[in-house]
Length: 243
Ligand SMILES: Nc1ncnc2c1ncn2[C@@H]1O[C@H](COP(=O)(O)OP(=O)(O)OP(=O)(O)O)[C@@H](O)[C@H]1O
Image (cartoon, rainbow, N blue to C red; front, side):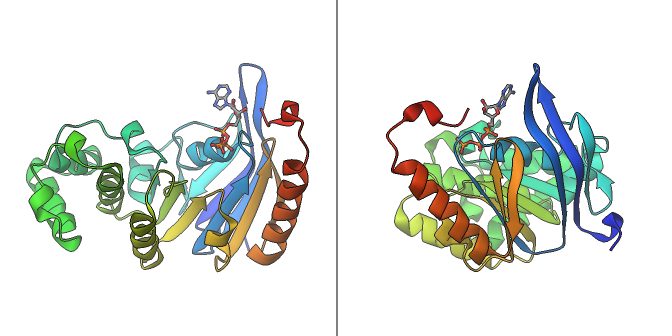
Protein backbone atom coordinates (compact mmCIF):
# COMPACT_ATOMS: atom_id res chain seq x y z
CA UNK A 1 0.00 0.00 0.00
CA UNK A 2 1.16 3.53 -0.71
CA UNK A 3 2.14 5.46 2.48
CA UNK A 4 -0.65 7.96 1.74
CA UNK A 5 -3.29 5.28 2.31
CA UNK A 6 -2.28 4.78 5.95
CA UNK A 7 -3.88 6.74 8.78
CA UNK A 8 -0.47 7.03 10.45
CA UNK A 9 2.54 7.42 8.21
CA UNK A 10 6.02 8.16 9.58
CA UNK A 11 8.74 7.98 6.97
CA UNK A 12 12.43 7.91 7.83
CA UNK A 13 11.88 10.17 10.81
CA UNK A 14 14.96 11.32 12.70
CA UNK A 15 15.26 13.94 15.41
CA UNK A 16 18.53 15.53 16.40
CA UNK A 17 18.63 17.94 19.36
CA UNK A 18 21.80 19.73 20.45
CA UNK A 19 23.94 17.29 18.50
CA UNK A 20 22.22 14.29 20.10
CA UNK A 21 20.19 11.84 18.02
CA UNK A 22 16.93 11.22 19.89
CA UNK A 23 15.11 9.36 17.09
CA UNK A 24 16.70 7.64 14.15
CA UNK A 25 15.09 6.52 10.87
CA UNK A 26 11.68 5.66 12.25
CA UNK A 27 9.31 4.34 9.61
CA UNK A 28 5.81 3.29 10.65
CA UNK A 29 2.81 2.91 8.35
CA UNK A 30 -0.24 1.93 10.34
CA UNK A 31 -3.96 1.49 10.02
CA UNK A 32 -4.32 -0.59 13.19
CA UNK A 33 -6.77 0.78 15.76
CA UNK A 34 -4.79 -0.16 18.86
CA UNK A 35 -1.05 0.41 18.76
CA UNK A 36 1.23 0.06 21.78
CA UNK A 37 4.70 1.50 22.34
CA UNK A 38 7.09 -0.03 24.85
CA UNK A 39 10.69 0.73 25.74
CA UNK A 40 12.98 1.48 28.64
CA UNK A 41 13.15 4.78 30.49
CA UNK A 42 14.80 7.29 28.20
CA UNK A 43 14.39 5.13 25.08
CA UNK A 44 12.53 7.86 23.17
CA UNK A 45 8.85 6.98 23.60
CA UNK A 46 7.66 10.42 24.72
CA UNK A 47 9.87 12.06 22.12
CA UNK A 48 8.28 9.87 19.44
CA UNK A 49 4.81 10.76 20.74
CA UNK A 50 5.59 14.47 20.53
CA UNK A 51 6.90 14.13 16.99
CA UNK A 52 3.90 12.01 15.98
CA UNK A 53 1.56 14.69 17.37
CA UNK A 54 3.43 17.40 15.47
CA UNK A 55 4.44 19.19 18.67
CA UNK A 56 8.11 18.77 17.73
CA UNK A 57 9.06 18.84 14.05
CA UNK A 58 11.28 15.98 12.89
CA UNK A 59 14.73 16.99 11.74
CA UNK A 60 14.43 14.56 8.83
CA UNK A 61 11.58 12.60 7.33
CA UNK A 62 7.84 13.20 7.34
CA UNK A 63 4.94 12.54 9.70
CA UNK A 64 1.43 12.41 8.33
CA UNK A 65 -1.85 11.64 10.03
CA UNK A 66 -4.76 11.10 7.65
CA UNK A 67 -2.63 12.75 4.98
CA UNK A 68 -1.98 15.88 7.07
CA UNK A 69 1.62 16.91 7.67
CA UNK A 70 1.23 17.39 11.42
CA UNK A 71 4.28 19.62 11.96
CA UNK A 72 3.51 21.97 9.05
CA UNK A 73 -0.28 22.12 9.24
CA UNK A 74 -0.82 22.71 12.94
CA UNK A 75 -4.47 23.69 12.59
CA UNK A 76 -5.21 20.58 10.52
CA UNK A 77 -3.29 18.45 13.01
CA UNK A 78 -5.35 19.72 15.96
CA UNK A 79 -8.46 18.06 14.58
CA UNK A 80 -6.66 14.85 13.57
CA UNK A 81 -4.49 13.95 16.52
CA UNK A 82 -4.72 14.48 20.26
CA UNK A 83 -2.21 13.70 22.96
CA UNK A 84 -2.75 12.88 26.61
CA UNK A 85 0.30 13.21 28.80
CA UNK A 86 1.12 11.17 31.89
CA UNK A 87 0.82 14.20 34.13
CA UNK A 88 -2.36 16.21 33.48
CA UNK A 89 -0.71 19.28 35.00
CA UNK A 90 1.66 19.37 32.02
CA UNK A 91 -1.20 20.20 29.70
CA UNK A 92 -3.78 22.07 31.78
CA UNK A 93 -3.55 25.81 31.31
CA UNK A 94 -6.90 27.22 32.37
CA UNK A 95 -8.44 27.65 35.82
CA UNK A 96 -11.84 26.09 35.09
CA UNK A 97 -12.96 22.88 33.43
CA UNK A 98 -15.09 24.59 30.76
CA UNK A 99 -12.32 26.98 29.75
CA UNK A 100 -9.84 24.12 29.49
CA UNK A 101 -12.10 22.01 27.29
CA UNK A 102 -13.13 24.98 25.12
CA UNK A 103 -9.56 26.00 24.35
CA UNK A 104 -8.84 23.37 21.68
CA UNK A 105 -12.13 24.09 19.95
CA UNK A 106 -11.45 27.83 19.67
CA UNK A 107 -7.92 27.02 18.49
CA UNK A 108 -9.56 25.00 15.72
CA UNK A 109 -11.48 28.10 14.69
CA UNK A 110 -14.82 27.59 16.42
CA UNK A 111 -16.69 30.62 17.78
CA UNK A 112 -17.15 30.98 21.56
CA UNK A 113 -20.78 29.83 21.20
CA UNK A 114 -19.88 26.75 19.15
CA UNK A 115 -17.13 25.87 21.60
CA UNK A 116 -19.53 26.28 24.56
CA UNK A 117 -21.91 23.82 22.88
CA UNK A 118 -19.12 21.32 22.36
CA UNK A 119 -18.06 21.66 25.99
CA UNK A 120 -21.61 21.14 27.24
CA UNK A 121 -21.98 18.04 25.03
CA UNK A 122 -18.80 16.32 26.11
CA UNK A 123 -19.43 17.07 29.80
CA UNK A 124 -22.94 15.61 29.48
CA UNK A 125 -21.58 12.54 27.67
CA UNK A 126 -19.34 11.81 30.67
CA UNK A 127 -22.03 12.74 33.17
CA UNK A 128 -19.90 15.63 34.39
CA UNK A 129 -22.01 18.67 33.51
CA UNK A 130 -21.67 19.79 37.14
CA UNK A 131 -17.91 20.18 36.59
CA UNK A 132 -18.26 23.04 34.07
CA UNK A 133 -17.42 25.86 36.50
CA UNK A 134 -15.23 23.74 38.78
CA UNK A 135 -11.72 24.94 39.57
CA UNK A 136 -9.40 22.37 37.98
CA UNK A 137 -6.85 22.55 40.78
CA UNK A 138 -9.50 21.31 43.21
CA UNK A 139 -10.02 18.09 41.22
CA UNK A 140 -8.01 14.95 41.97
CA UNK A 141 -5.29 13.74 39.58
CA UNK A 142 -7.61 11.13 38.07
CA UNK A 143 -10.34 13.74 37.63
CA UNK A 144 -7.84 16.14 36.03
CA UNK A 145 -6.79 13.30 33.71
CA UNK A 146 -10.44 12.91 32.70
CA UNK A 147 -10.68 16.66 31.98
CA UNK A 148 -7.65 16.31 29.69
CA UNK A 149 -9.21 13.31 27.97
CA UNK A 150 -12.46 15.21 27.43
CA UNK A 151 -10.44 18.16 26.07
CA UNK A 152 -8.91 15.80 23.50
CA UNK A 153 -12.10 13.90 22.66
CA UNK A 154 -14.16 17.06 22.15
CA UNK A 155 -12.01 17.80 19.09
CA UNK A 156 -12.98 14.40 17.60
CA UNK A 157 -9.47 13.41 16.54
CA UNK A 158 -8.76 10.33 14.38
CA UNK A 159 -5.81 9.36 16.58
CA UNK A 160 -5.17 9.80 20.30
CA UNK A 161 -1.72 9.28 21.75
CA UNK A 162 -1.67 8.32 25.43
CA UNK A 163 1.64 8.69 27.23
CA UNK A 164 1.46 6.42 30.29
CA UNK A 165 -2.05 7.61 31.17
CA UNK A 166 -2.39 5.26 34.15
CA UNK A 167 0.67 6.42 36.05
CA UNK A 168 -0.33 7.78 39.46
CA UNK A 169 -3.94 6.57 39.22
CA UNK A 170 -5.43 4.15 41.73
CA UNK A 171 -6.74 0.73 40.67
CA UNK A 172 -10.44 1.65 40.29
CA UNK A 173 -9.62 4.84 38.35
CA UNK A 174 -7.19 2.89 36.15
CA UNK A 175 -9.85 0.28 35.42
CA UNK A 176 -12.46 2.92 34.67
CA UNK A 177 -10.13 4.85 32.39
CA UNK A 178 -8.99 1.64 30.64
CA UNK A 179 -12.61 0.64 30.02
CA UNK A 180 -13.43 4.08 28.74
CA UNK A 181 -10.45 4.04 26.37
CA UNK A 182 -11.26 0.52 25.16
CA UNK A 183 -14.74 1.66 24.16
CA UNK A 184 -13.58 4.68 22.14
CA UNK A 185 -14.19 4.59 18.41
CA UNK A 186 -10.80 6.11 17.60
CA UNK A 187 -7.25 4.93 16.90
CA UNK A 188 -5.19 4.77 20.10
CA UNK A 189 -1.41 4.85 20.39
CA UNK A 190 -0.60 3.87 23.96
CA UNK A 191 2.80 4.26 25.60
CA UNK A 192 3.13 2.07 28.66
CA UNK A 193 5.55 0.18 30.87
CA UNK A 194 2.91 -2.45 31.53
CA UNK A 195 2.96 -5.17 28.83
CA UNK A 196 -0.29 -6.64 30.19
CA UNK A 197 -2.25 -3.61 28.98
CA UNK A 198 -1.14 -4.33 25.40
CA UNK A 199 -1.78 -8.09 25.12
CA UNK A 200 -4.98 -7.65 23.10
CA UNK A 201 -3.67 -4.72 21.05
CA UNK A 202 -3.28 -5.00 17.26
CA UNK A 203 0.37 -4.01 17.05
CA UNK A 204 3.27 -3.15 19.37
CA UNK A 205 6.42 -1.15 18.68
CA UNK A 206 9.47 -1.64 20.90
CA UNK A 207 11.78 1.35 20.95
CA UNK A 208 15.30 1.50 22.26
CA UNK A 209 17.80 4.37 21.94
CA UNK A 210 15.50 6.13 19.49
CA UNK A 211 15.21 3.26 17.02
CA UNK A 212 12.54 0.63 16.48
CA UNK A 213 13.84 -2.70 17.74
CA UNK A 214 10.70 -4.67 16.90
CA UNK A 215 7.33 -3.91 15.30
CA UNK A 216 4.84 -6.77 15.16
CA UNK A 217 1.85 -8.41 16.82
CA UNK A 218 1.87 -8.05 20.63
CA UNK A 219 2.79 -11.65 21.46
CA UNK A 220 6.28 -11.82 19.88
CA UNK A 221 7.21 -8.21 20.71
CA UNK A 222 6.11 -8.38 24.34
CA UNK A 223 7.77 -11.78 24.88
CA UNK A 224 11.09 -10.49 23.53
CA UNK A 225 10.75 -7.18 25.38
CA UNK A 226 9.95 -8.80 28.72
CA UNK A 227 12.80 -11.30 28.36
CA UNK A 228 15.20 -8.44 27.63
CA UNK A 229 13.89 -6.32 30.53
CA UNK A 230 14.19 -9.27 32.93
CA UNK A 231 17.72 -9.88 31.77
CA UNK A 232 18.72 -6.22 32.29
CA UNK A 233 16.82 -6.07 35.59
CA UNK A 234 18.74 -9.04 36.92
CA UNK A 235 22.03 -7.16 36.54
CA UNK A 236 23.01 -4.66 39.25
CA UNK A 237 24.81 -2.18 37.08
CA UNK A 238 22.85 1.10 37.11
CA UNK A 239 25.38 2.67 34.74
CA UNK A 240 23.34 1.06 31.94
CA UNK A 241 20.27 3.14 32.84
CA UNK A 242 19.16 4.37 29.44
CA UNK A 243 20.05 7.96 28.69
N1 LIG B 1 14.45 18.47 24.50
C1 LIG B 1 15.39 17.56 24.70
N2 LIG B 1 16.69 17.89 24.58
C2 LIG B 1 17.66 16.97 24.75
N3 LIG B 1 17.43 15.69 25.09
C3 LIG B 1 16.16 15.32 25.23
C4 LIG B 1 15.08 16.22 25.05
N4 LIG B 1 13.92 15.54 25.26
C5 LIG B 1 14.28 14.27 25.57
N5 LIG B 1 15.62 14.13 25.55
C6 LIG B 1 16.37 12.89 25.76
O1 LIG B 1 15.86 11.94 24.86
C7 LIG B 1 15.89 10.65 25.44
C8 LIG B 1 14.51 10.04 25.35
O2 LIG B 1 13.62 10.71 26.24
P1 LIG B 1 12.07 10.34 26.30
O3 LIG B 1 11.44 11.24 27.31
O4 LIG B 1 11.53 10.34 24.94
O5 LIG B 1 12.13 8.84 26.85
P2 LIG B 1 10.96 7.87 27.31
O6 LIG B 1 11.18 6.59 26.58
O7 LIG B 1 9.65 8.53 27.18
O8 LIG B 1 11.33 7.66 28.84
P3 LIG B 1 10.43 7.35 30.15
O9 LIG B 1 9.98 5.93 30.02
O10 LIG B 1 11.41 7.53 31.25
O11 LIG B 1 9.30 8.35 30.18
C9 LIG B 1 16.40 10.82 26.87
O12 LIG B 1 17.78 10.51 26.88
C10 LIG B 1 16.18 12.29 27.15
O13 LIG B 1 17.14 12.79 28.02
